[in-house]
Every structure is written in C-alpha cells, then in structure tokens.
Image (cartoon, rainbow, N blue to C red):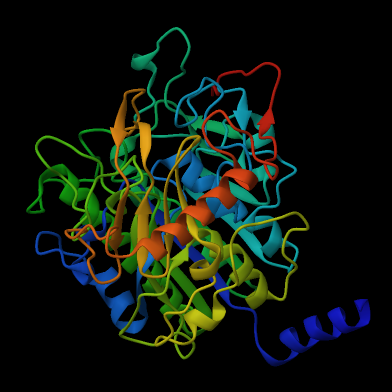
Amino acid sequence: MKILFFLLLFSVSAFAAKPNIIVIFVDNFGNGDLGCFGSKLHRTPNVDRLAAEGTKFTSFYVASGVCTPSRASLMTSCYPRRVGMHVSDTGGAVLQPVARKGLNPSEVTMAEVLKSAGYATMCIGKWHLGDQLAFLPTKQGFDDFFGLPYSDDMTKDKKPDVWPELPLMRGEKVIEAPADRDHLVKRCTEEAVRFIEKHAAEPFFLYLPHTMPGSTAHPFSSENFRGKSANGEYGDSVEELDWSTGEIMAALQRLKLADNTLIVWTSDNGAVKRNPTQGSNAPYRGSGYDTSEGAMRMPCVMRWPGKIAAGAVNDALCSTMDLLPTFAGLAGASVPPHKIDGHDIAPILFNAGSTASPWDDDGFFFYRMDQLQAVRAGDWKLYLPLDGKFKTLSSKQVPSPMELFDVRHDVSEEREVSAQHPEVVQRLMRLADKARADLGDSKRAGSGQREAGMVENAVPLLP
C-alpha cells in the first residue's frame, strides 16, 4: 500500500507542476457587493475579471456566519464544533484579545498540509484564531505572518484595563501599536506581492485574509480610495480590496505565474446589518452573524487558466471546508489523519456543468455557536423547529417554526414549501439527528468533537 501511495505522489509531481495557491478571504463582505454578483453600486473590475477568466460558485458556504469559527473551518476542513472553535473562552461568538483559547496546535491546518508538500506559506491580514504564542500563524504551518491577530474593532478603548492597543504583527512580534488601519489593505497587498516575488521559483501558498471591510461601522481605506466610491466608507473599502486583487493578478502576470496559480476569492461571512445600510447580501435573505443564506452563502470565484472553466457559473453545493482536501489532492499531499468534514471537490472545479455534490448526501449543517439551526442537502434548506432559537450574536431566544425552501431555485426564500414536501423534511430531519450525534447541539456533546487549544495564562500582545 505504501509503495502504491508513493508511486501516486510521484505520478502527480512528474506529470503536473504543483499549482501555486492564493486564498483571498475578505471580512464581513456580502454576495451583492461585487459587480460580477450583481452590484450596481461598487466598481470591482478586477474581481469581475477573475470571474470572467474563472468560475463563479453560487452555492458556496462558510461553516459559520461569524469570523473566528468561519476561519477555523477554512483552516482545518472541520465544522467549528468539531474543533471546539464554535465559542470563545468566555462563551462569546468570537475570540477577543488576551483570550486563553485558540485553534489547537494538534489540528492540521491547510498551511501544514501544503508545507508538507514543499510549499512556501504565508498569512497576511486578519488571523483571529488565537492571539497567544501557541496559536499564532507561525505555529500553525505558516512560515511568516503580517497582520492583525484579531478583528480591527478590538481596540484598547473598548476595554482599557485588559485589551492592548490594536497590534500589527510581523511573525511573532508586534511592530506597531495601534495599527494604522487606514493603510492595512495597501500594506498587506504590498507584502503579498513581495511574498510572490520572493517565491516565484517554488510552489507557494498565500493566505490573504484581508482586514476589510472589517467589523467597525466605519470601514477604513487609504487616501487613493477614501471618498471615491458611491457607497461611502464601505464602498471605498470594497473598491480598495478590488484594487488589491488587481495588484496580485498583475504580479502573477509579470512573473509568468498566472497560468499555474489557483486563486480563490471569497468572504468569511456576509455583510452585517448597519443603519444606514452598507453591504449587500442580495439576492439572499438575512445578514451576517446568523445562519441565514445572507450570512453563510458567499460570493466565490476560482480562477486557474486551462483547468477551471472561464466565464462559467457552478451551483454545486460547496464549502470553505472543501478547500483543504482539494488543495491536498492538487499538491500531492496527504489529508489530516483525523476526521475532517470537507470533500475533495476537484471534480466540481474542473467540470462547470456538474451540480452534484458530496454534501447532497452528507447534508450541510448551519450552527449558531453550539445550536444546530438548519440543514441543506441538494436543492433544499430546512430551518429546524426550535422553541428557543438564538438570534445573531445576542443571547436572546425566540421561537422558530420549521421552514423548508428550495434555495437553488428560490434563492430569496419567498416560498415556504414544507407541507408540499414531507419526504424532504423527514430526510433532512434525519440528517440533523446524525449531526447532533456527531457534532452535538445545545447542551448536548457530540461523539466527534475535539478540544480547542488552551493556555493557562494569557498575556496581551505588546511592542
């Protein structure tokens, strides 16, 4: 068996160069915020070009509507509950500064998988999987890190006795505090281009979790973009993110790397509700931070010339959890030895007409922290009947009826059809029971859960 395995690895490396891989993962950004997904408000020519030269995925989900658990799933190919990252150390939805908790170093990350296959790796942007030394990107498979350890809104003024000034880090050291948020996208882009240039002669993995539009009511942008959009500070931020994408594409073209680089462009969760409105999750219902389609169904574009169809649209059910095993297959690397939830979706990536997905059989589960709230399989999404459904980030519970929608053909969920399809309801309820046994549910542990990382004494990150 081992001989066969190594022969397979040899055949992968002998007949196909390992692709460079870039994941651009923006923050609190909705489906309706890109021109290629319908925005008439924002100018996004570079991401639109990615879509024209690649494939748009229109049933692409994150595993949580909030950032820490969403990022944990991307990195590990696991539901947040499986790796203990569905709640913070204080019982909140996301990790805060000086948290004792973080992504367990025993988990195998996407970076570690690709590093094992000879990739140079770097994380540039917002991490938010633990700010203690044991949990930083450099301890989770990344050769280097430049960016923020947590959200841009977690500033000293919120908790002056506990939280430090917002730290900008290089590697494991704070190089600036407070971080200059106006220029974060610009500086992260410059770092990304330098990384690409430095590793042009070897396979590389660039994880670019941009800090914007961010978690404040007033997104940041540099002088070249501030006040220039038709949508205030949010639109300025969106258009600078698009510029950043263009700079990365230009660097790849200049270095003759574009044809052997897979780019994935998506968001960690949907746009959040602001008054007045800033981001758009159209045509989906709901806002970021919950289990709605608007919160968890993301704009996603993938480009790899000659491999992924240009100008195509694919509505197969996919997830950020699928990226790790897919990248492993493309790189000739082994997937983690413990259970993961994602699937190798290379057959979907390379066949734009295929809408069949492994999730159609397994079911895709929507958790709000520890509460299972919905299930999707194939065309159907079932919102489970709950006596006390938690809403967004609050502890408020409200009764919630069972609702069934065909979210493939009725994407705005205008027609509730549970009475017309009792057999679909029964099937999705059975899948929910299976999830509860494996991953757990409110006040119920699952047999497949693992512990998050913990440190005894957390210390603030200081220059």
